[in-house]
Image (cartoon, rainbow, N blue to C red; front, side, top):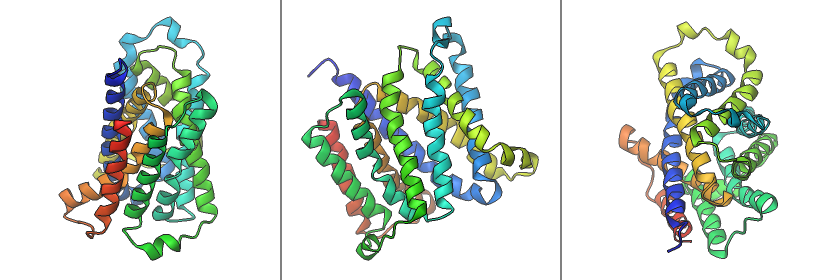
Length: 293
């Protein structure tokens, strides 16, 4: 076993937790969506997440950490752009179609990793990415072959493809731009960069929202999104990007639909049909291949 094996294993563990935490946000977000503008919710989650991580990171700040700050609007801006373009795409298309487009993200991330850092995807890793993508598509379309074959890509899907490209580019850049800062400090600056982009985009809805009149479900969703689905997951991705190749980091996004199915079944009693679990099994097997690789 090589010296880097434990570090790689920690990266895989971080991304497994990432997928589990992100998946919960879909259920909460769907319940809060009717009561608040998505742009306002996105900007608020970045603001709260930056405040939380900033408080934790404050004792670790050093003067040297405030150099080359241009890195962070670019890093956080890419992730903020992903969320913005996702919301814009959902105005023109449906979540199933965007979920199908998202399956291209790990492959694009592996491509950016090669272009920027000459990260080579081994044959087994490439096979696992393809298998995981097929499994994720099967889950997203609930095992309906006719729905998969009838997928009609339009302007919404094109917009989301650009957003996915931003997300894919973020992963190798996160590794390139890291200059030894403590991970909490690095995460805080990245969140501030995301806040700059989402804050400018959502300035109007932020000011128009009557925050005191929002129902409890919105505040619950906002707190979860900020603490777990933004601050914690941002930290986990940053942690993993300096330990794993870009394609492997993004591949864990394929687990999100499977986790959504699991949580909905456990907590809402809404289990999917048996054929859909074939996709879940394929995704899990693919990620085991990545871990073995």
